[in-house]
Length: 407
Image (cartoon, rainbow, N blue to C red; front, side):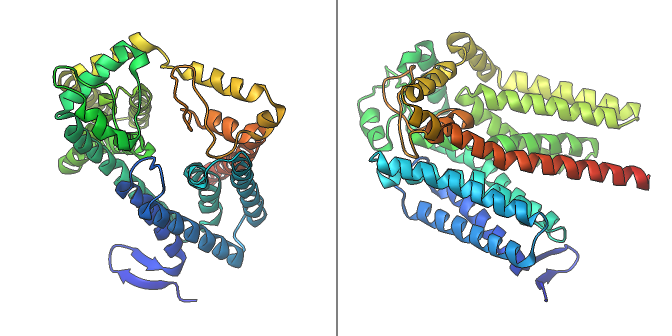
């Protein structure tokens, strides 16, 4: 069967029928950039993203079955487990009288987690694997690089200046009971009733652009490439990666998001330590140390106010209600064994103990699945990813053994 359709000489990049589902999936993800975060009702963009995602998954599954992909039995078992995790909380939500659009808002993200990720992992063949990784990586980095720019533009428009946003958050965290995220339709009303002498302490759902996981990933990935290019003396490429990192960290720090910033710092320290360990060249080791010190000095000077804001938030709010959130999840489920086993269903809401209004989400994947799908859902999620992790470890060991034998 002829796979190659378009070939670009010298680049090794080509489009084939087997890669089409991955492009659909990437398009589905790129549409995040044109969607309002957490829309009250799915619009055209959200429906188009869902259609691309579903079609991509169906085509991938069809191709994997036709080619009898390696780990075929595990693929089928994983898909059945994922489908069960997606469907039964939806049925629970319908039985509880939850609106269908609220169910869809929870259901679509779970398609990415329990259907898409295992499907890509099991269906990618060796011939196309590097190209598949490149396609997916390009999509994630694109979203991760553009989302913080969208966030900064939106917040500048809403608050008048980015300093206004920073001031609002400092005022908010000086009294954590002020924290509130109004529906998008209320933003105009809140803005109109807020005077310049009394900075508002609310922000619209547009701020959630910066919460996109791809932003943290792009910062970490580009941060690693920055140091690699510095060592290779590729200044232009290093500057490009530095811009992506700076914009992402600026947006994350502006909202005082400690976890992503901390994860970035830890990952960079690990990667830098790895680079220093792998090289036996003293000059390169000194170059790494000098680069790290220089970057730290520049960051400390340029972002000193934001760094102090992160420290201040930690002092004022500690875990910021995360422990209380877990407690509220357990309190919601503990009164009914059916809820404890099966959850409250997709689209269901609960009231965290750090605020009065009900919400549909939590700040942890595990507490989210526990709340919406119960203990059964947690077990299904663990079953899907335990096999993927075991598969990765086994293949990593095989690759290490093969490398040692060749050496």
